[in-house]
Image (cartoon, rainbow, N blue to C red; front, top):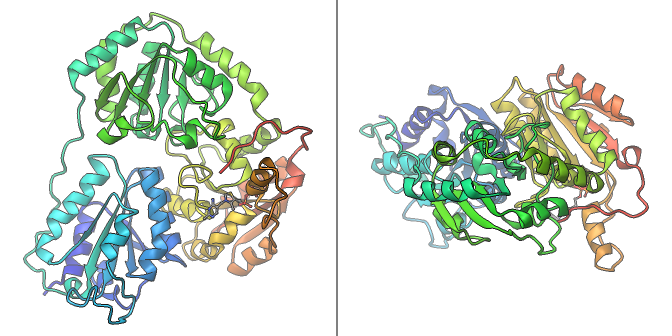
Length: 538
Ligand SMILES: Cc1ncc(C[n+]2csc(CCOP(=O)(O)OP(=O)(O)O)c2C)c(N)n1
């Protein structure tokens, strides 16, 4: 006899899941029974939030979901923050929580991990939350989850399964995946109207977001045909490479870029939310589009948020860009001079000391993935760091903005792409949220470089206090000896004081069989500013 749990493991494998993160508990034991009969690799984090962030890192760099197994109650609530982060950034993730038996749920009998309504609780941080009440429903429930992951705007899916359903017989459940729905193709009349507008535009601008991550080739061709300056959000970094004559190499929140949007007669926004954390990073409310907006998004609801479009096209980014390209009169203008002028104006907004620091990552580890936390250099990376490819940079300095994200996310990325160097860039405050996951990194043998930006305080918030005319409260924190802790976990650990030393340690980290914690003291890397003009903020 096969149980529902065993069939589930086979089905996950059939859908292409190759990695599962989880801390086993009394209720999830039966989720594990079928796992050894599959090729799925199981990784054990030290906290369920770590599991979620690892699954997030895995998905950011591949576009594919990993699975997470948690117990109800504490396990599920521990992973909820990571699911919130994934929801905010459209990251696919399948979280399966074992609940009390179906007939016991919601009775308040004080059972182990009892949660009144787990599905309702997890729905708050899920693209879809469901409770499986019989094995026979498994095929269509998984088909729906994977439809969210691959056929529409991705996000985390939460599946509650009562323990008696996990152990129920499921021999007659077919493990074959359902065919997934096609992604939405654009309406060709709307594409024609958009092309008409773009063909007559004098000063078009392209605003690209993370929704274009898998459509880089198509949007690049479109940008070149339009010869329009291109702006990128955090999650779009790497779609155009540094040095491309149309790349506006900075954050959409800086004044010269905003001027570009204001002066544009047509703005083409693809797969971008136009939301605060990329377009109004300093919370001054001054983001505005001067011209007509053509907006393309796979999520129809997103086309109704933040800015009013002239033309709204619900479609897959790559398909829409390819369709638009057919109707664009290429070579009508040259956008490189406008782009160059913006990039020249941006020099005054960028900081050289952070530029040196950020540049050394790709110099030391070409092609590296950077997972950034909410720490000072990560704020500057929003503008000043250029990724070598799409899906090679993620940052918790914006969006949901969860401290502690970068370390487990970097481990997830490394598990997904072991041949690509991975760096976690994290502050002394952020690291203390998920420091325990160093243990996971050692256990899984992950050669990740963990660069700790240490200023012994919550600097970002101290700056916020000062900007509000207050002396900072609760911002100076005790920071432990990170190098001693890292070594105690079994990591390599080194403090560096110069860019050259940092580069050397980054390169060495790739030769190690465990993570390398590289501590940098802020005062060694920053040139004090008389009047700091450019800081980002939570
Ligand atoms: C879970 C969570 N709690 C609180 C915050 C608010 N917060 C944003 S940045 C920050 C300070 C981070 O300090 P650190 O990691 O040392 O980075 P620094 O700014 O000092 O470089 C805090 C507390 C947050 N983003 N996430």
